[in-house]
Structure formats: C-alpha cells, structure tokens
Length: 235
Image 1: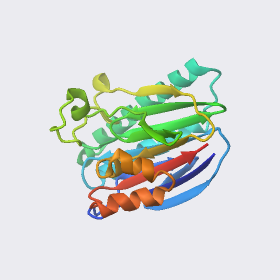
Image 2: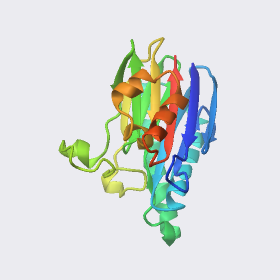
Image 3: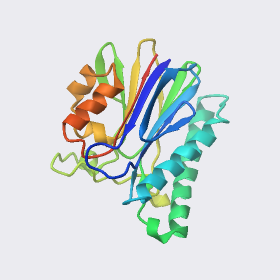
Image 4: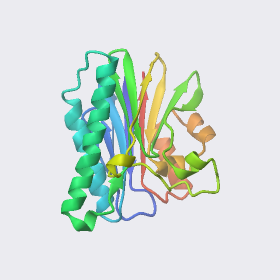
C-alpha cells in the first residue's frame, strides 16, 4: 500500500483548519508519502468555527483518532464497527467538552472522514462533508455521503457548505456513518476536504487521481478559496 498526502492552506485563508492523519502521522501545512503494510489508517478533519476554533477542533479529533488506532485490533467485523462508533461518540463529546471550557471556542467543530485498513478488510467512517472516493478500473466513485443540506434536500441551489452533522454536534443529533469496504488490488482511495471537492469536478478528480499534488494544484488554480487536503492511497 503506497500513499501520498498534502495538507495545504490554499490561496485565500490566513490559517489552515484542516488536519490529516496519515498512517500514524499528523499533517498540517505539509506533505508526506510512503509505503505501509495493510494494517493502518488515514483520515481528513476539516475544522470550522472561526480563527483558531477550527484548527483546535480538527487537531483534537485527529489526535484522538491517532490514540484510538494504537490499540485497534478487532476480533471481527462487528467489533470493528462498534469500536469505531464508540470512538466517534467519544470524540464528539471531547469537542463539546473542550468548547464548554473555553467559551471563545463555543462554535468550533470539524468534519471527519477516515479509512481503516485491517488485513484484507477496510472500514470507512464519515462525519460531515469531507469525502472518500475510490477509483477502480479507472472509474471514480464517491463512497462517502455528504452530511449536507444540499444532499439531504436534493436541492442544488442550497450552498454546499451548510452541513447538519459534524464533530462537536449535539449528541442527540450526532451521526457517524460506518461502511465496510472490500478493497481489491489496484484500488485507489482518496480522502479530501471540501477545498478540493467544491472546486474540482469528479471528471477532473478521476483524471488526476495519480497524484495528490496535481489535485491540490487544480483546486488552487480554481481559486483555492478554502484549505485543501488530499490523501491518496493505492493498493
């Protein structure tokens, strides 16, 4: 399994609220690449809540996920799914509790989209509107479902950045989607923040899927109005 990751501030924002988790490493304002065995995880967290708040929320959740993954060794599929859901609930509560202590962070939150590979299996966990794509046989497919008002209403006129679910959400409204995947040799998986998906269409993502740097470049060429994180993983 080989990967490359870029977490870029973009062309407009003054700070980077995105954070990537890449096979045990946290990445912000940087890039990395390498090869790993098929027991590892990757994730993108896209923070929100104004200056500092979004940065803190995404880092809280990414660090929490890193700690969780150190002990991830499920006995079966049900245990894996239960463990991921329990972690997501706890991470959501951690963001809420931190915001309650520091009133200037009251509005903070973050999306979270992660891929966990374990032996020949994989699970996708999704909270918010950061995305997971798979390219198989040269064909792009979005595997995650945006927790956005545009997706929920089916109305393309609704602004894409209006989301109803995120880390830091009210516990009674919080959702964590867990999907079991069946990876195959040659698959390419991509995780990204909406700094990519809002500015680069699916056809261009499909065509540029061989290089994370190329995709970030496309988003910046289109204006780069948000932070841009792309993680590319190939089996």
